[in-house]
Image (cartoon, rainbow, N blue to C red; front, top):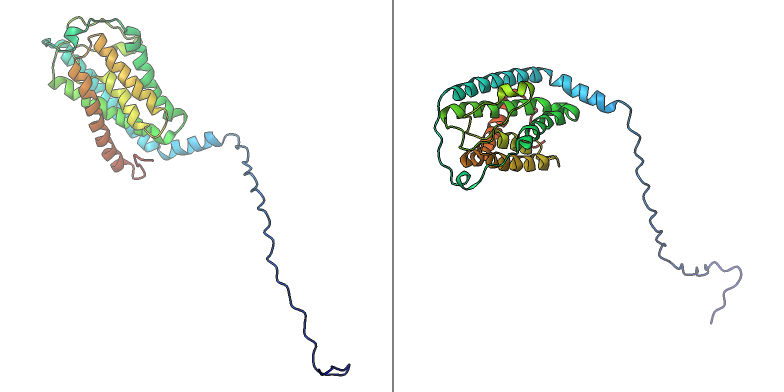
Length: 250
C-alpha cells in the first residue's frame, strides 16, 4: 500500500454530505379578517345616491301609478253602477260565509304598504320597479273586470274600508281577485329575499279569506296567480325598455 506524504498533491477525499429533508413547518392559522366598523351615514348616502340616479324613473312610475288608479276607479265605478248577474260556484255553494273583515281590510292594506315600504327603506333602486309592476297589474285588472262583468256572489259579507280607501272598494269587480294577485306580485318582486315568503303566505291567506267571505268566485282566485305571472313578465319587458340597467335576477 502506498502512503501519502505530508507534501503530496493528492487531495484527501471529502467527507460525504448527508442530505436531510427540510422540516415542514406547521401552517399558522390565518388571521381573522378584521371588518372596519360601518361609516355613520353610509347607508343613507347610498340610498340617496340610488334615489337620485332613478329620479326620472320614479317620476314616470308615479305618473303611471296615477293613471292606473284612475283607470281602476273608472272601471270599478262602471261595474258597480251596472246590474250584473250572480252565477253558481262549486266551492262557494258548499262553503258558508265567514266574517273575516279585519283580515280582508287591514291584512291586505298591510301587505300593500309593506310592498312599497321595503324598497323605500332598504333599496331605492327597487322603488320604481315596484311602482311600475304594481301599476301594470292594477291596470290589467281594471280592464279585465269590465269584460268579465259578474255580480258579487250570494251571501257576501259586507266590508267597509277606512278613510279614502273606501273610494277604491267597488262591487261586481270580480275578475280577477286583487287581494290574491297583489301579494303574489310581491312574491315575484322580492323572490331573492326571505321576505318573499311573507307575500306568498299573504297571497294564499287572502285567497282563503275572499272565498270564506264570498267576495270572489273560485275562478277569480285561481286566475289571479296566472294573471299576476303574465303581468310580471310583461312588466319586465317594459322595465328593460325604460331602464337599461334593470335585470329581474339582480
